[in-house]
Length: 89
Image (cartoon, rainbow, N blue to C red):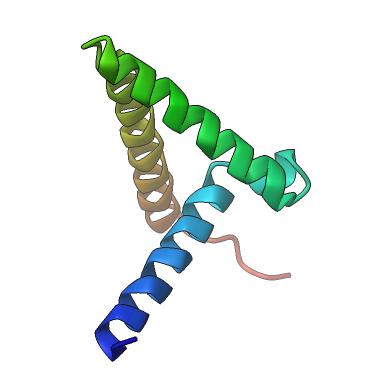
């Protein structure tokens, strides 16, 4: 495998791990890989079924929810930067 392909695969793996963790799935399913894969396959089936029906509402709903989560994280980080930390005692 070429170096660029290895690097891309590693970045993709890391991104997936971060997103699964950010969604709280690791704690919800006790880090069970089979359950995580089953959840992703279920989502893929729902998206595929909606696409066949010409209805993109599943993708649109997932995207909106994800964007709201990213916005909330960004706002929380900005608020944390704005508020001074209390001094150590």
